Image (cartoon, rainbow, N blue to C red):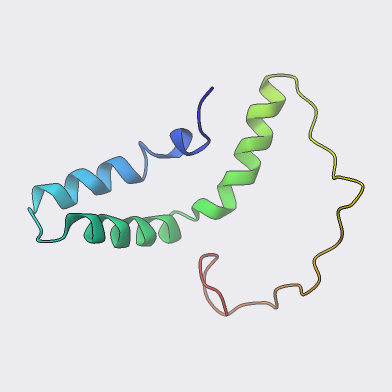
Length: 89
């Protein structure tokens, strides 16, 4: 069993981490975290995650999970934002 993040990490986190490590920064964890944030936004990663999960489930011939009986609609829907998918208004 793999984590969903494993599907994306070699296109996002790994190159960023090696690029930052090559610069030998004073605070590498912070630098990698900030660079990954920017990479996730630029690559529109959030828009790709759910469709990829659905594709993986479909490849295994698993049906899409149904919502729980107790599930309710979102109480306060997000308004149309003026930033990218990673920005919260």
